[in-house]
Picture 1 (cartoon, helix red, strand yellow):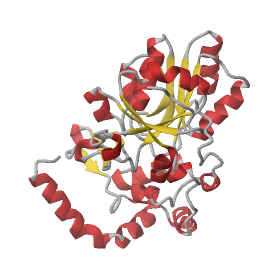
Picture 2: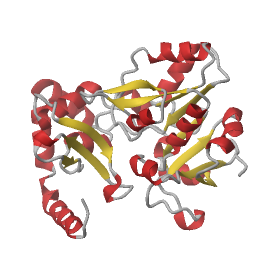
Picture 3: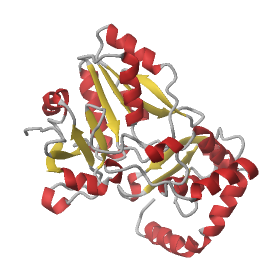
Amino acid sequence: MAFKLASDAAAYVVVNTKPDVLEKSSSGGAFSLLAEYVLEQGGIVYGCAFDEHQVARHIRVDSREGLAALRGSKYVQSDMGDNFGLVKKDLTSGIAVLFTGTPCQVDGLRAFLGKDYDQLLCADIVCHGVPSPEYFADYLRTEYGEDATHIKSVEFRDKRQGWTKSGGVRFDESAGCNFHYLDPAFSTYYGQFLAGEIYRESCYRCPYANTNRVGDFTIADFWGLNQKDSGVDADGGASLVLINNQKAVTLAPFIFKSAICEERPLEEATAGNSQLNAPVPRPKERDEIMKLWLEEGMEEVTARYKSAHLKRLPKWLVKRMLHIISGGA
């Protein structure tokens, strides 16, 4: 396949052909293809993972086994720590690096480095916006108890109910129930995130929310994909990939050679990913939520949210029961 710059023509739908990787990926597994290519060159991958306390942090990975922690969506701002310095150390040592993150993180890395490196590959994600880590941590404490050591993982996306479904919080065996779904009707944080009500102030004025991307590649869910026209089965998830510069054009045939990969109109990609057109509008509810949180605490935020969404309970219970009867998880 001939690859083109996104500004000229195209977006690409990409689906990883490894079932186990596709299942664990939020969308079509494009990140894993990028990461595995760099690892095969003896390189290093930097990306976001939750630590044992469910704090999102960027980490350095040097093996395929380590990629598991980097897969999946983390709907919260990550702690960069000293990763910029580690990236520079790797690059000056002649080691290939893949850095993945939000566009502002990618641009921050490029500014820190001060120059481009031939062996540096950057992939930015199509970002909705990020809530603060403090708000997320307070939500977990309020919803699941002050001592949250029984939380094994937070998985905002889970494909057992399908690509478009939400995920949940996974617990260790001592907690009794090992999985709690994050349905936006009842999960305060998840519902507010999807509504764009709790992002950082800067996210509502994001200068990167367009098709002028800072990464060599841009990756996202390919929402709005025309499956019939593309001929791609996206039931298990599909990635949107934008090719943003000549470096990406050169490497793309090698990175995506084993994947299902089809060119799509850029307009189709932007129609399904509004953050490629403009930042998320700042809702009036944000001021109310932040004021309530700071003055009365997350308990009151959660109580009011759930009270307002109580009317969704009957419909949700019927939906869950039908899914269980049909053999779902």
